[in-house]
Image 1 (cartoon, rainbow, N blue to C red):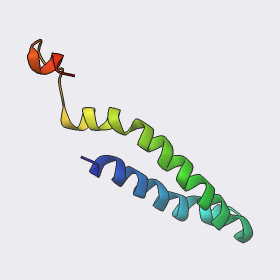
Image 2 (image 1 turned 180 degrees about the horizontal axis):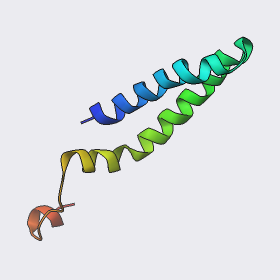
Image 3 (image 1 turned 120 degrees about the horizontal axis):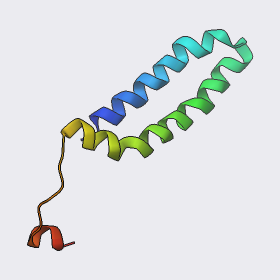
Image 4 (image 1 turned 135 degrees about the horizontal axis):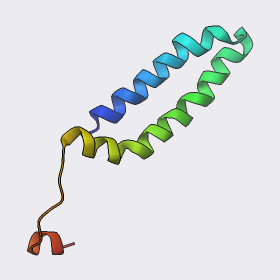
Amino acid sequence: MVAVPLVLVLTFRDCLYLYLGPLLPASWGEDAVTIAAPAGALAILCLAPWLIVRAWGTRRLPEGPLRDAS
């Protein structure tokens, strides 16, 4: 259930280290990645419910007692 968002978070972090880190001065590189990684992870985790619904191909429950139980 959490594989899709987790893979996206890890890929985002790795891309920051590979592409953003070398572009910045050495004194900024680690700090920039340390700040940007949690911000990107938070954005991905906020989108996680939408991503999981799309990955699983879910559909709305039909009318009935199970749907009304909540």
